[in-house]
Image 1: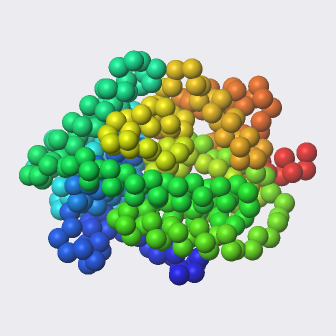
Image 2: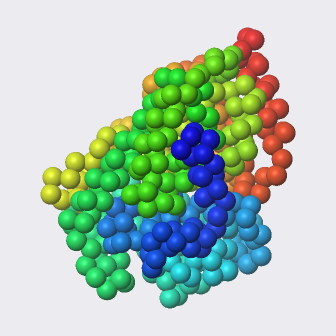
Length: 384
């Protein structure tokens, strides 16, 4: 397929509701089961090893009107939580085996409880991922938490999920993460070879495909991107920060780059490329995943790494990507992103790094205002 065909296929997949994603997958694999995964991170290898399609659930965007979920939440809650709950309240997820949430924030924790209460027949799990990465007990605790999830999911399905199957899935996801890193590296070295919107669409589409199908598509995408001609243009090279959970609308990313910025790196769909390197199994895939999560993953606002400040991680991301400024794109009412913004802003001011904050929500319909803000920001840097 051509670059344009791959991107269009991925964007089409993102336009589907989760029930439609499953229905489309069953055309290729009749009887396939699915399991929903709320961002940021969950051991997808366990779900895939169980013979299920892991489906990333990042809310419902503008595909659903919120008619039920508002009555279960306060008004000052991020829109991804509301639209995700709406999916369950409307029985959009009734054909899924279950859903797993993980340590992001209090909203995610409460969302897991609300889903459990309103979908009592569904298996709902919450991964209590560690926050103290330096504790001597963190490795065994994390592995035990992954193993608990494996055992409970297997009991739900009525079959054991073997470690050998998880190891095979780990090899496959290693391949996907390796190819994803290659795409990001290509964008860093050849700005303009792939737009921020297209890259985000491709990576997010992978959260809605069986990895056996996504890996060959990624290989084609890497080849297509490497073959594309790049036309240099005057622009401000930026890093996008704060989109680890709820994702900015594709149209907002288009507006950012059209306004004179070139995205060199970002934290979008960060859970799909959390690890810096391949995860080495060594006969214990769950132990390897626990080790990778604790000591081999990139910084993110949902983790509290002792001795590794996230502010320094952002500066390192900038240096490695060759960026000169930062665009913060937190979702409205996103506590982790907005609280971290205070720390990030202070550190960037100390380092003399320009930055701009653009809040978004799922129901954004017009992008003229943020485009104007970004244009003004870019011009202030380009013509300083």
